[in-house]
Length: 336
Picture (cartoon, rainbow, N blue to C red):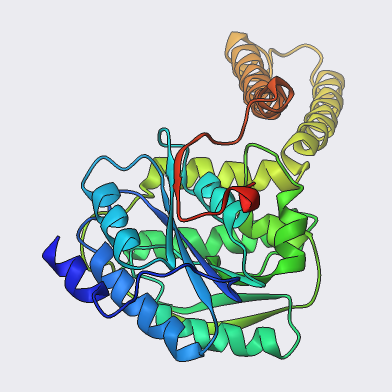
């Protein structure tokens, strides 16, 4: 507690005017890093010489993060807090932050300090040159296992090839978006959100800025393999129909193979009409393998159809994307 107060003691407790720069940072169990994140972020934003706000979104934290965020807000009126009623997930925390942000430019950055705040001035410089989306592109990924680096690289390149939007490779959610882009995103209320894809889909003038991603200094990753797999599925199903189209392609392929196999069997019968043929062509083993193969393919694509159908079911229920238990530092007439 004393650490946060010492870091913010030089800031006068005063009403915050209309910010030019808003920074949105989802927070989930980051009590060890929040004071350092606040210190570095404020130092960077103050160097820009523009009014700013820092919007921290509490995504159902189970540690002391909410208490620390409240202390920072009490000491510095430029820091605002959105407290979720429960954990809704990283992408919805970003959504809430951009919904509440009031700046002409909105920067999205994680609070784990893997994305260095010191890159923000370069993002702002590109924005002032006239770009509407400035995404931070990872030139290096320190502290990550080879498996995560390989799978992440493969995912970005796969989604770039199979989706109908140009999603830049090796980019995360760390980016700056102009108010026009933020307002466009606020009209999109789909539940299974892939924010980096949505920010690419809206178009506008975009550019990348390369940077070195740092290793996590404390705590543990919030994206284990299971969540990464779900995140990848959300990205693919949000912007591509290819998994559904594969069923058609594979159906034609299996039908063609079956036709060729039928011709092969007929030719063998004509060539050797009186001799029993090999069991690979005639026998229960061949039939069993064929039935199991077709059954497996059908089950796979029933699962694919189920993924899309489940997303439709979620959308038609019309539930809110998130529920805010408390919002600190916002004017009531400016809240979404």
